[in-house]
Amino acid sequence: MWEYCGMARTEEGLTKAKGLIRELRNEFWNNVTVLGSNEELNMSLEKAGRVADFLELGELMVDDALHRRESCGGHFRLESQTEEGEAKRDDENFAYVAAWEYKGPDQPEVLHKEELVFENVKLTQRSYK
Image (cartoon, rainbow, N blue to C red):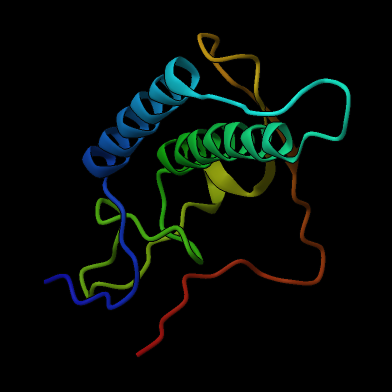
């Protein structure tokens, strides 16, 4: 039944991705070598910091995709589609803006929500057929 041509996600695939990112992060911190000295601007240190940031961001993005159990926009979950294979929204549970707070490598992230209020727009199921 599934005909979606873009990027689709599943809970299984996202859980695997989270594990792979954690493995990469652990390998990075155990094996990173930063050349240079503390006497001058160290571009190697700056680049290593960026890699660490991207690993944290990647894990947060996977956590958000796992948490959002609906299909909407770029969030197409195979577990959440109509009988016609269209994205199935869940506005009752996911009509909010989310921001995740990273607490550290071995700490759970904290979800901060801001509910969306629609006064002039009616939320409806979309069809792209």
